[in-house]
Length: 141
Image (cartoon, rainbow, N blue to C red):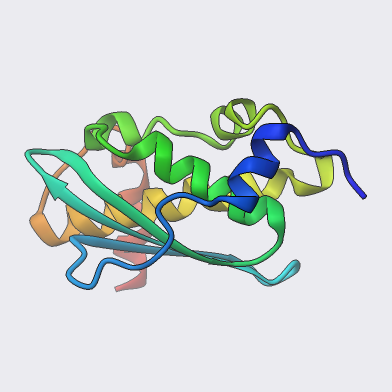
């Protein structure tokens, strides 16, 4: 059994912000087919701030704890601030994750990022921190 910090255990046992936002302004999904973890983040934006953040996660304890922590960290932040939530920041905030669970922090940060990107795309917004990713989309269309 990998050793989890008290903070990881707390967020796993009592995850915050679980659920979906029916009329979400942005939705982001991220999954890891290898471990079977799937996360969906829903965001409500008001005045460029994340007024509400909810998630649904299907996965291991670490994945649930990460989703909970990311949602807590993102709530109330501006979109630009929320984009600065990186996997290492999440892992640090949780008091560290076992090496074999580190990829979970990646998923949480990515799912949130995708939700913000979804919102920005719908609104035609250019956000600091998202610019570098636009060229890859142009090729798909």
